[in-house]
Length: 160
Ligand code: ZN
Image (tube, rainbow, N blue to C red):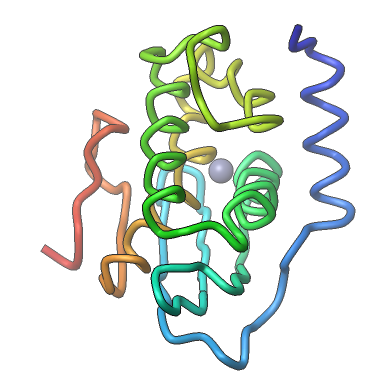
């Protein structure tokens, strides 16, 4: 059962003590993500080798929801394969837009604390930005933005 207080507790914990926050010396992939709606700006760096995310970090200025999502994301995908991370990206996206229910089969673990953002349409992009930025880094796309985008499923790629 995901309670409101658990959600708040997790968000606060990850803001006080963000996991994998900082730069990464051995990064071979990186991407920047922007959410102009809120002002969130993230830079994600990772080391991808033989299909595994060996290390990952994030930096940037963002609201509490975005920061907590980025912190939990890095903790959850570190050491996983690119394929497993992409499954989680897809599942997280489906959860925040209401296509995946907590009782459905998924690999999100504690990330289900973000289940409630589906009821806060303006915060969906905040929660999902780190995941889109991770996907961009895995795809070697330098910059993504949620700008001029009514559908959080769809993110414009690049500067177009
Ligand atoms: Zn935000």
